[in-house]
Length: 385
Image (cartoon, rainbow, N blue to C red; front, side, top):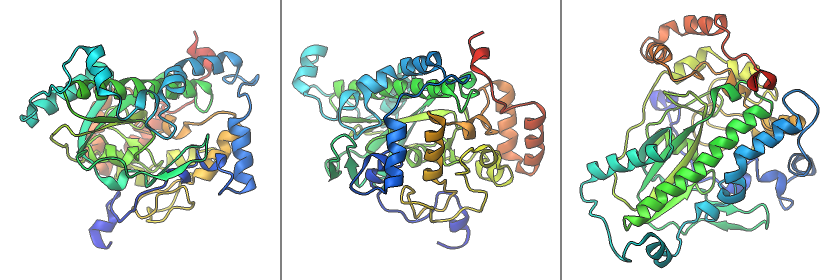
């Protein structure tokens, strides 16, 4: 890469990433991980979470587990894929019988503009906060799937070539609960996001199957979510390694449906994220694990859990996970303090327009953000009032 192409965030050459190398799987993989990484996994996955500190009580943990219920009991979108609500190829004869649609019937989808509009509206009606379409870039499919329960590690080569498109959906996380980060209120916001991912992605996939086409719903499994969302025109990549959307900033979770249905792809967008991230750095300052880079973008990440080869800001997943272990939960400080993390109101839409079109005033917007008190942490006792 050279010249302007290298300076463009997201450009570069990248190969397919192995699911085994994610920071969520390495601590559960005794075949490849160090004793230090395995001990982190034992502490994070193997003990109860709640404690007596404000925001970390049994009440707060039980509330979070309630929001995670659909995902953790029925969805499994954080696992290997192709199970639970994310099943790839359910028995079509059983679907035809239960849904009372004759086996072999197929909806005429020759009008790609019309069916794309219908699919997007259906996704929104089913609960997606925003939806976009992209061509399926197979670089974003994991090279291998890894099951941390069985340690099975096999290539992903079973997605047929006629899956040419992906429906990418973002699911807004609650603004108030995110303000409690890094306590369990934020974990509840994420849990609701993951449960909505499971419900909406599986529902959209089922809708497409009833039209006579094939569909594979995905959570965090099977494919990388952020680059697909960028391809689908749903936002830009931020310094914190998270998708920044025009409507909710980084306060989203992402689901996908891969499909054979012929659709019209959207185009990537620019909303001023790169320019703002260059002068901001609030997420790096607020990161308790100091896992977010203060430096310029690069094409090489610091650990094996990074997907190298893309010119961007890389986080350090090991430092991030180390804080999760100490915190007895996860963390979303980088989302809480992000200047793009605002309610989707007319006023904030007005400000976002200025950030996109008048980046020379970004330092003023940052000053306003601080002066108005955005990004401050809220206690769970205030949430329950």
